[in-house]
Image (cartoon, rainbow, N blue to C red; front, side, top):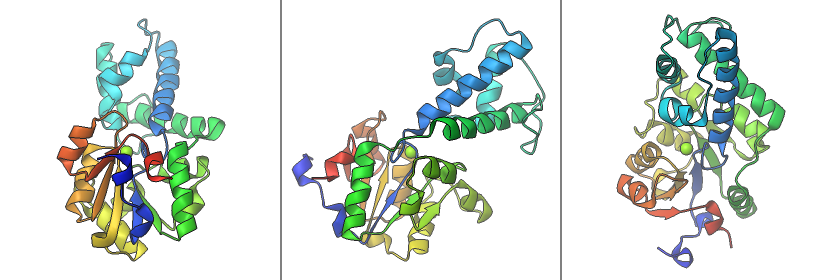
Length: 243
Ligand SMILES: [Mg+2]
């Protein structure tokens, strides 16, 4: 589909946005936080093989936080107790180290901020000018902090994030629950609403939720994979919807 065939997103009842990779390049902050944290840990523990960027892709990317910690430490022949998700970030358990990464992530966000993708910001401005309601649908428990650091929190009357999903026992993406609940909170009908996602699981979630238009943003997953998951249109950047 060429750009001039793209639908006008202001013609929908609302537009629901995933956050990480759609509105903000959050992965870069996560990578930076993992690096900072493991460099400190390796120095403290006298681990000889330094943390490298390939460690991120090999052991951390796409994994749940604690699973990632455990698998990276195993690559250095380090075994520590798993601990508990409530562990203090200072504790040398898998969960403690994982929680420490979250603290570092918040610190990096505060210190350096995060700029939204320019094309996404322009689309948000266009939708705001047209009076089209928008919401965020994110699996992240850091969504509020990321939106605040990006300076775009005020634009969203509804932010359905990992904290609300856990509190309300909503199944995570690719189940449709979080998108459907966000539409309910915003008071809009999925059958007249568009959803924007960059991940396979997210596209599947919105598609299963009956959203009338599912936009895939290809930040590296691949257009075909996003289409196969249920995306109606795929763009490289949301700038494509701004004219
Ligand atoms: Mg995403």
